[in-house]
Image 1 (cartoon, rainbow, N blue to C red):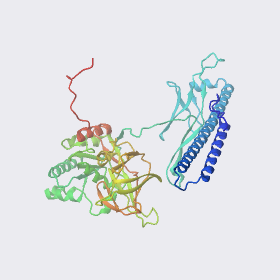
Image 2: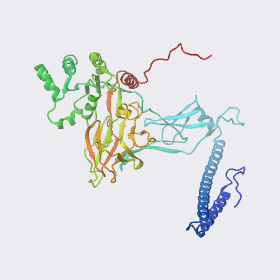
Image 3: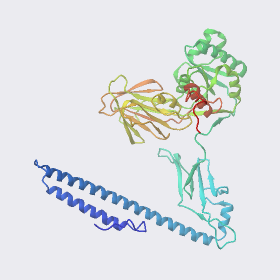
Length: 522
């Protein structure tokens, strides 16, 4: 076997030796395989059987060593290539700096040129020339290495650049309108110009004219509050009021004064509500907010949720102060939380193409796939953008939004996530594996959950706790982030409302304070 050069002073002079070593290992393994084929393994002689097993072990070890050696040498060759390219770049830029003369000083003090955009201001505080764009990408274009030019009386910082590259937002589709360049720059330091969780403020450009009020059914206190609120909004705010047909009948039963209240007669009118309604008011708990969101299959007007339920993770406003709340909300500006929704499609095995799906379903909390009344474990194959994720065997699976992270997903062991964090929670229900931990996937992925043909039983899918659908073997459920979020008004801001809800609703991390008169450190 040829001697190795791994101890050479040059880390990139091992390529030939590595090839020689790998070939030697290959020939040794081949010789062992030939010897193994010539060795009789049949019979009852224990020594022959042990010898053949030992030869197999040696052959496997030689094969693994050869593969590892080849991989290491390939990695060394790649790093050698990168090293040579980096040295060539540095030499080229040094030659450009010498030929540029005093122009480098202007770059350090003024602006640098971007071929695809306007000039970029220099950030002298940290030595970075920073470019920000409204598309959401921010780059640090030039870094200074701090070295001085010995030929100049002024201390000038030399500039070093890496290979330029271009970023673009890409959307699925053949049309070029879904793809546009964002920015090209010289340095690989990328930061987002706008935080995705930045607080969002809503300011009215014109006064709201129409309000839709949705209430929790079968509640006397809610019925009384609704009548009082409708009367006050009409007389003091001069607003047009829309309610559900059930609520209008309740109001007219109380008094004919409420004849001015509008409603709808057929379901087709519901699809046009977003074109008529400026504001949605919910009187109830989180279930009422879910019901109000489900009424809108497309854009959703801002929702003002009043708390008249049990927990109230999404209902920060108190009903006893509704007049002050409306004064502030109608005047604006108000802080809102954009709550993302999931768009779900059920694809039947009988469909010839994936486009032949059932009507899409929008969920604000979660979609749950469970085993129903079957005694068998669920068997679900999960894919993320056509990449296999895992096979779920257990009681089921929860695909949750971040707004629904404090609902069923939390009870199944998922994490609590701020509602403005864009993402999809992948939470198993009682999995048949202790290593199956929940995941949080980015918001742009598409998740497909399929019931395989060899599954022992069917599965059931429910959407925000209702509309259960049977999934037979071969059927699939496809989920992605819906383009229409649900904007809910905040009492303070989204973070304050979220923390207050988990403290008051869940009593999160509530315990007695440790006694101060215990043992102390000395």
